[in-house]
Image (cartoon, rainbow over all chains, first blue to last red; front, side, top):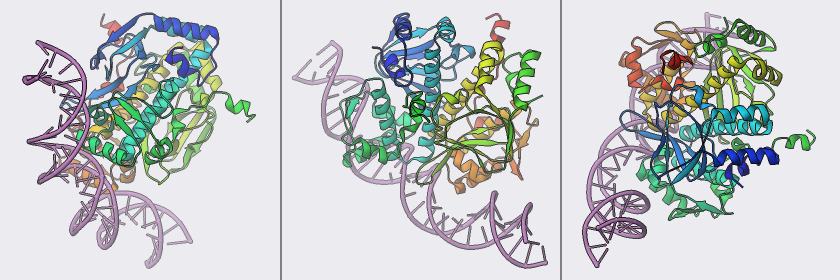
Length: 245
Length: 245
DNA sequence: GTATCATGCTAACATAAGTTATTGTAGTCG
DNA sequence: CGACTACAATAACTTATGTTAGCATGATAC
């Protein structure tokens, strides 16, 4: 089962036809990219919506003087920007971290969804709203949390999101980000990222080595990062109805 | 003409019927709020989409220990969160800065839009995408810009957005935010906000007094804030077609 | 096997921004 | 009118994080 379907089914119940539709779309127009290359660049006209099939990528923005900020990460099953084609040009770039394969989704695909696949349409709205919530949480993260809180929070988020797509073990996950990547995502310097990771290690909150992240005590890491998963909206739609609200 | 219509017409050409529909929706279910009160609170079940008719409001998040971050501002003509009702609970709060009046838009209103008002639907997608872009830009702002760049950038953004809704003069606007508000939005301390504003004043980039902001030289302020308006996507849809792209 | 490169680590030092505290100023309320 | 109150301004001091630089490690390539 694809990571996308796996993820969306955490929120809506999809029919067999829904799943077929999604898997069919994910099998067409597939492209692959080497690590550290751009899938799309700021200033370009957006043509398609990208679905990440495999690998890690990120959205980033750059200032004229070279300062770079990773504004979000894309994990397998993530969709880049619904309906982006109505805009005239990209206001950010999308680049790969690892080798990445994507499927390009056309405008026509979304037209089909909105006329004939209401459950998928709802699931896509959920995806859009959760992405917005993640971006807000990053604003909070950069604005209010200290370096170690910020790092702990980011690690929790990535772990939760990977788990949602079926890509994490019970207490860890594969983790391809370099300290330089973490620096660009947290707004810290590389040196301070290193210090911060050492601190988390010293507190037995993480084991991070050779592209593998182990979280020996997720609860403690969450509280170290003041992490509250509510913004990921992991509850299935209708649960409040089941509970006879 | 309402601020909403004014704003959306910067992007799509609306028909008379479109405008009528929007103005009708904006006249029903109107509520008013005192300054510094909450329109919605984190944890609540979202019921309606809010359209800001008048006044300034903000979205904010709070940590258990009281640290607060304003994650975005709402100006007249802004819509809070399209389709928010599919989520089970709010992950943030919405509070007023000034006295505010809003119109609550129902699920049924959006159903009507999506079946019978394609231009409005497109304009709403534009609004959603621009809001996402603004949130990304805030991430960049907090992660990479220095205090004075950050402040200059924020002032530019608010000025541009007010102008879009027809709420700014040529070289200034009404500006109800306190230094404490600016601190919560920029992730700086109140004291440092004060220092930063002094610096901008000393460089003749702003005149800020008694809830009025004057920008004597917008160009210079923009370059002081490394402000590039591309993320606001102010270009009307179809312009690239007119230009025979 | 050793040269090269990306990545990680550490130390010493510099600085932007935070903290605490005090004072000024204007508006509002009784 | 005087007493509050919210907001703004400043000073003195502290601290978290940035900067520069150098070294260590491990993978990849020839």
